[in-house]
Image 1 (cartoon, rainbow, N blue to C red):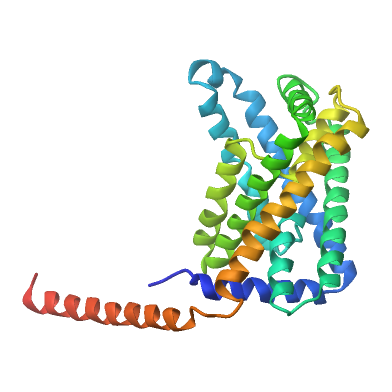
Image 2 (cartoon, rainbow, N blue to C red):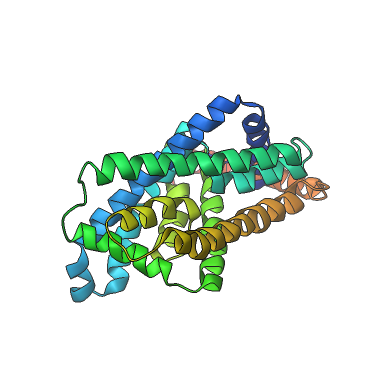
Length: 295
């Protein structure tokens, strides 16, 4: 039995989700955006704990293994966001772009959603890393403190164009993860669909603006040599712009053009569906014959 939607239905559903997001009350959008920042920060903290504590693995098994292990814990945050219906800015770059190009929402709706979710995510990250991490003293000791400081310092010294390009790749994969999560019909399929692209995105060191709101800022609070001005100009701006292009253009516009624009493939879609139905009937017939003949 099929437990996933086809790509046509998935893109239509994403458009419908964009409509729902544009029509929800503004206070709901603010709260959901705040919660998304907190939920993603849970993953950021887990990454620091695992990454800082697994340093010996990099020496004995190689840095690639350590990256894979610490990247494997980060998808938890996005799974929580998708399953609870929170509003993540980077996901909205895809969702609202599709619904707007589909002419179900307006460009004004898109701008409001992007702005509110972005700053709502920021507020959630600030609350979490200030109150529940820094003042709670969760990572005040080494190796976790030094690892958090190292993350912030390294990110603050990566060239602007590299952060921008990494931002494109990062949100391309994040939006594909959300797309796969929507494609799945059951919980297990959704979790696997979200997990794999996020695991890849973190392991290869692509960039995500909302994740950096936790990872870089908590490192700054713990003593990283990175000023607020440099953080905004060299980390947040290039990564945010890259995230918008990766999500809105390479996923939102691309899949809208392929599966919604003129629906030129509708006939092909129907033909494929018919072939699948016929194949299923054939398989059922073969199973009946096999059982009857004792195969």
